[in-house]
Image 1 (tube, rainbow, N blue to C red):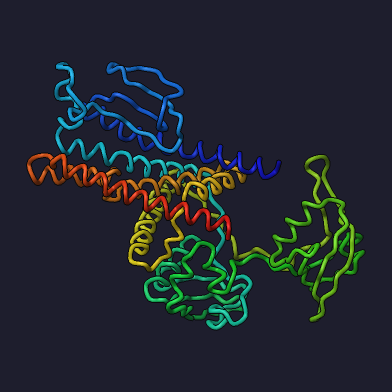
Image 2: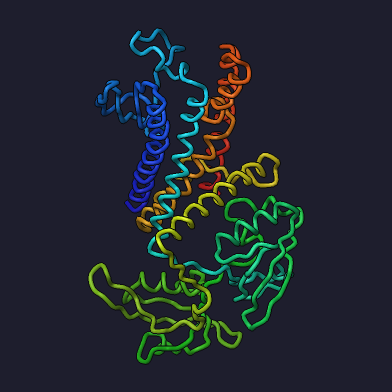
Amino acid sequence: MLFMGSVLTNLLSFIVAISVLVAVHEYGHYIVGRWAGMKVLRFSIGFGKPIWMRRGGTDNTEYCISSIPLGGYVRFLDTREGPIPAEDEGRAFNQRPIPWRIAVLLAGPFFNFLFAIVAYWVLFAPGETVMRPAVGVVTPDSYADRAGLEFGDKIVAVGDRSTEDWESALVAILETMVADGRVPLELEKERGGQQRTVLDVGEDATRLTEPGMLFDGLGFQAWQPRSIVGAVTSGGAAQRAGLRAGDRITAINDAPIRHWSDVLTTVRSLPGAAINLEYERDGYTTTVALTLGEEGSGNARRGVLGVEVLDRYDGYYVLREYTPLESLSAAITKTWTSTMFTVRMLGRMVTGDVSIKNISGPINIAQYAGESAERGLSYFLGFLAIISISLGVLNLLPIPVLDGGQIVYQVAELIKGSPLTERAQILGQQIGILALLLLMSFAFYNDIDRILG
């Protein structure tokens, strides 16, 4: 039942996400087309047979929701599809000036970028708490260990770029790593002072760009408080079991514990339960049986161990507060940097510097959609912004069946002085469909590989 519930959540979240973003994209085409004097025959969310339809407006446009929720389209009047009524002469897509046609084609991706800006503006308006990029647990004899990284080191710059949060740090790490296999870091040491060092991964860079490989491959985790006991609550479950300040919790019910968040997540889910807790003291490992306490009632019950964390959060989290204008500026900046990063990574995939395993298909996107929806509206809105940017970039690729390819056709017609021949357009469509099929094949393969792997 839990599995089915998760699948249903993923599916519904995916349908909502795709429907919203397709509606935004197609509305861009629709509204600019109307401004350009074109007649809109149909505005459809989804493909296939309509399951809901109504007609409206002076042009009696069909507005419909169709049975296959994997896209959508706006159908303009076009003389290439057959004769048009005399009263509509001049209102067909291919009869309007070429600059207007290009504007209509650009409008879809533009509205995706605009949606991302609005989404980020909403998210930034109340302020945001960001985690400073800092080093967590370091794996012995890893790239990070050999470069001298230690727990608690803050990453203040990667190369010549300052890094105030994990997003900017990860972008800079990836881009410098794929450039020449070296990641220059400037660190603020936990014990004080500055250090410059280099993560030298050499020819291993491409492998480390595979999904989920970066931190494990470099040999360190993002900072989180260690699972070391800072204090023991008098009369609590931990004190009765003999735990002391300084003990490091290493496992609960044989499940490994690496960070304090692992302790909290596990303990809170087991109110009043009997558990086996493994901890390390003075180099020796001990396992004790204990019964957790509990607090709250009903569905709000949660387990209590009776310990406090040793590491404090001071200096590792930063609250950013914005005025309305500053939050808009931050939203525009984030959308721009995310767009440019996506473009650069796509280019690196073509050259082979970045793994093509980063291409995600509908299965993986649905999983992320479900996870973000379960975490709350703000996470889901952030997910929508990311996917909207990706959709905007994808549609600008010069592939004939996409907006970017159609723009190439219009530019060619502008230069040539007449439309491309029907043969050339059909050939372009065939090439475009083949390119999309290859892209979808990679995406589905990656999705299945992640599930099986």
